[in-house]
Length: 414
Image 1: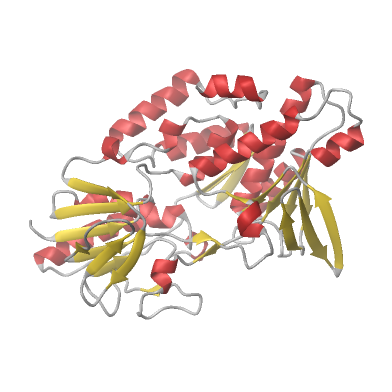
Image 2: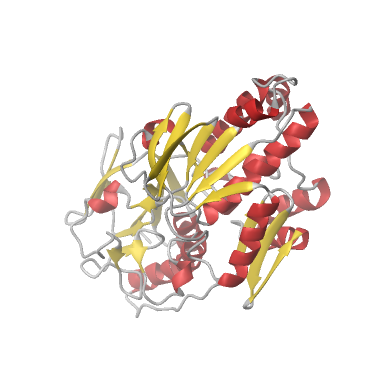
């Protein structure tokens, strides 16, 4: 009961592991912010279909007092001495068991200006900033501006056409089209989706890709595949396709173009894959350190359906195994293994549609949107939070919040 269990990262892997092992020792959860984030619904937060408390509950609302919380970035992990150093924290954390669930960070691929001038999309603050940029761009447009000038001023680029880029671009386009109607603006907005590969959502199967491609067309998202971003500027973007470069003025550039390994994990002198992922046993332990468990998108777990790699769904499932094995490890028992299967795919596509893949069959449209809300209600942390959020969505609805003029936007938020 006195074992020190330190969990680094408060995402799906970290939080759900903490919930599993609470009471099994002196548990400490370290995270940069004071709340969990249900990242699959960050797109609905952008559109106002859900509120912050629905998808970003505070840790003190989810965890009992038997889990200590520290809000600090991780600076270094010393596996040899079993210590963790935090930024601006007076003492090192000692551990008997360490859980690594730090997750990846945005990969800007060395593109000029991308890290400094584009908006990533991984946190509540990113969604808030993007929504403010969209509102500010709309507010600068007078009702009598010619359609071609409106289109130029209200061009937005989303880099990366994985699931995140497709969800985000359809959401943005639907919000902007609705704002045009409400504000009686001429013409239409322009949302570009830029992808280096040959197709959108490359990690998903053909069934769900058909719904994604159809939704992109219905939301009037302009898809550019085999296109490389060359430079991001404060008011524009330069991209290249088949040797031809083009520069466009933009209201904002949003970067969803990939993830790279967390620098703290890069510093660890342990066995890794060519991509830098931690090589772990089927029990989620590091080969060199039996008291260190790793899960989520920083670790390579071979016994899982390939489409699960790097997803919140995999970390969600691994947390149960991690919690069980940590308790067994402390008791000196034989650890467990598990094969992880796809639990079902659910992707948001604009403000009125979604696509869901379950049981090997895909369906889309408004019904899929409702199914997605029901599916994700069941995956929210703790039964009391699921009950509160489920009641809110059922009784208060999940209609999107229009992009109102800045003054009205602030009053609604306040």
